[in-house]
Image 1: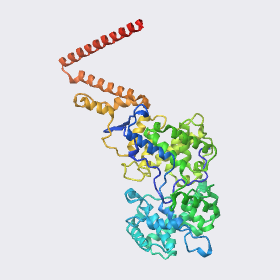
Image 2 (image 1 turned 30 degrees about the vertical axis):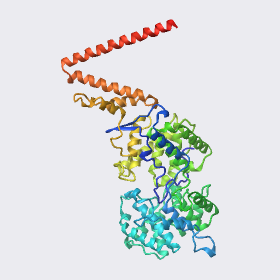
Image 3 (image 1 turned 45 degrees about the horizontal axis):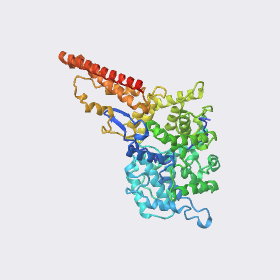
Image 4 (image 1 turned 120 degrees about the vertical axis):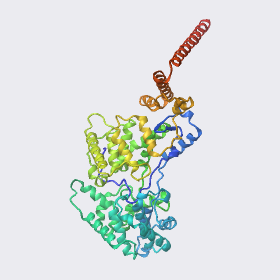
Length: 563
């Protein structure tokens, strides 16, 4: 099975916490840049890795051991709102440790969510959702009056962002946020939103809830309505929701959705999942759990794209072996998540595992299909490039994903921005690369260069070794000579790309630069006298080396005869 998914919850409804961010410090220092020229060069074997690089490698290797997930204030708040399921204790939280976490983790501006230094300006709606959920949790149990007041001030100060079309919209926001406003009224909270804005949000919510006629994607819509149960609550069809329960007891691997379901129907498997979350994270919850397979595959994909995967051969093989076993067993953490399934298929096939693409194309019947998840479509497109003969399903996927991504570019839904300016920047560059450089025509070293550039706005202090050689020999001072470093280097890197051929690439590039300098010197740079002197010098050089090599040959021959 490759793309047959009846349901999925790959993205948390109210959080955008990054998983496994590979920061620039983790990139080996042997990466070098020269102005606009950026590539990577490494020593021939791991034996020559510097001490600092070795420590970075060990730090990255730890990522393979366990997925490090950030906690989500939004999901923690919904777990804090779960009441004790007994008549005598219905006014007390079932998970008081989550309520304590909310009390202890309010940010300086009154919000909850991503730390302020890391918060993207386009994530204000995400912060509003997390903050309102935490306020509801505290108000539900009569806790933290001071924190509630401070949180309401944050809502008031940022209420204009609710109508900002440039803001990133969390999944289900148009249903969940108005639903939380309704719940706030039930708790006696006066929120600082204009009545006209609230009425508009409630009207939009009702339209979403009552819309019909989704045709082919009716199943995807049902999965979506189950996924946003926090915004529906008492009006929810819980029998329909429980059809999406997974083997671990969760709904879509989402703590918030599972917590709301348990609050209403006290399902023991839901409780088992919630206990498992707290056993792992003690007093808080991540946005999605578990995420082991997807996060570790993301690490492999990142290391591959940066050109440093050879330092982690054993770890990658061990992880892919486990992933392959899960694939053969039909693990739901792979096959119920389009993004994970496509990434697993691509990496397994690239690394030589036998995986089949034969299945029905059920993407449009999935949650991601209903949401038109661009990340999932991008992963499907990249997976469809790893194609063998007579695989029509991959040909079909490649065709429609390319059309979809190009259309999104044309209508402005995906745009290439400057690094660091938008939450969608990374996805934009990935889509641009996937469309501009198909797998079968892309050059591996150039792909590494683009990936490094995407991960960091690297400055000119990371300099290509060949460039230093030019500076040291003052070849850059020859005004008559063309500067062909990029051309000379990449003519080698495009064909001699293996790490162990590093010396060959340097030699090729140096000879190319010298040939260009000599050619320009004869064409425009030198006088007749200088040209004659250069020719005579080369003749003497060749003659000298001829005699040296001849003497060495005769000496070795005499030694061989005498022995």
